Image (cartoon, rainbow, N blue to C red; front, side, top):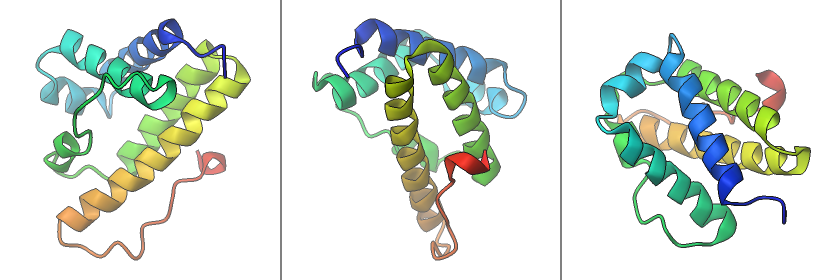
Length: 134
C-alpha cells in the first residue's frame, strides 16, 4: 500500500523490539543473542524495507542466527507473532498491518521448519501457526 513508508517500518521495528526486550519469555533470548541493538534495529528496518519497498538494503541471512538458539520452539514463535500482531495493529492502518502480519506468519513457519530440520528432526508434524489460533 502507498501508505507504507520507511517511517512506518521504523516505528514497527522499534516498537516491536521494545516489546520483545521487555517480554518475560523472549526478552532473555533476544537480549542474550543481540550484542548491538542499534545495529540489529537498523538491520531489521533494512529487512522489512527490502521486502516491502524493494530498496535492496538487506543482504543478510535472517534464518542463520535463529538456528543456534537452543530450545527455541512453537511457544516462542507464538509469542513472537502475538507481540508482532499487537505492534502492527497499533502502529499501522489495517491494510498495512495485515500485510506485515501475513508476512510474519510465513516467516515464522519457514523458520520453524528450518530449525526442526537443522536439528535432524522430522518436519512432518510442523503445522503453520494460524492467526486465529493466537
